[in-house]
Figure 1 (tube, rainbow, N blue to C red):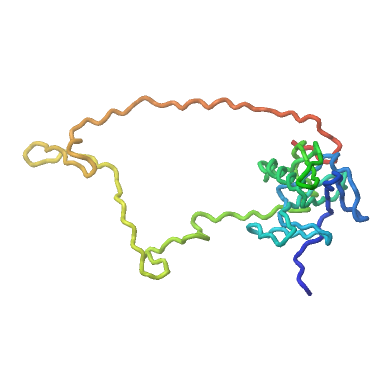
Figure 2: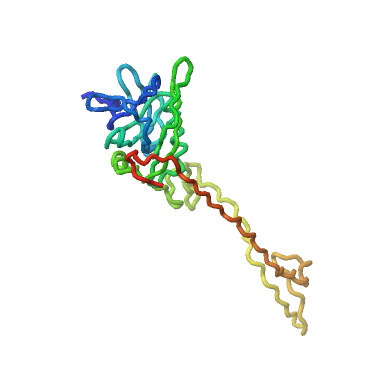
Length: 279
């Protein structure tokens, strides 16, 4: 059986945007239908998006998601970087999660802006509820594209439909400081790194400065006390000097500036979008 690594068919119902007309189209039992997706807020999950290379031609779609590690090189002509975004809009798309993944300039700009604006709240267990504020045709080179402006209406706990559709990736813990997995390994005690050429010379030992020894008067046997001997860390000029007085004045740290709390009132929210309330 021949090996097939391409993914022409998505594992989720699709959502597409016709950039020439600004009309959204979603998959259905009959193959596809136009939907009024831009009129209603929807939940998007950029945190669990997948990235890859996408080519769209008359033969269909060729989606090649990235594997673990850095993005692979471009597979061939016609491929563009894209993002597989899961969206949830029960009022417009029904109870199923849909995938939005496109190769248009309009979608690329929208996906980048969505990711950058939502990234600060990743790993919070919440997703943004997005509402389009403008869909405006623009000229790109010799063709036509679409400017997609949007706002975050609110943040809500990730709906179960989104959570089950694309579960969280497992967290890979970084190695501890005592476990070296890459880079230069520590040399053994004999200095031999196992690469030949004999043992590496040991680095010169640095002098260790210990605490300053206490000077005691020396008895010379003549019934009097001789001047104290100079220690290894002091000069002869230091003997007999009075120690510097210890400052008794204490520095008081300046009080931190008062923290001001700004509350943003959410206005003009749609309560009939079919999504749960959030923050």
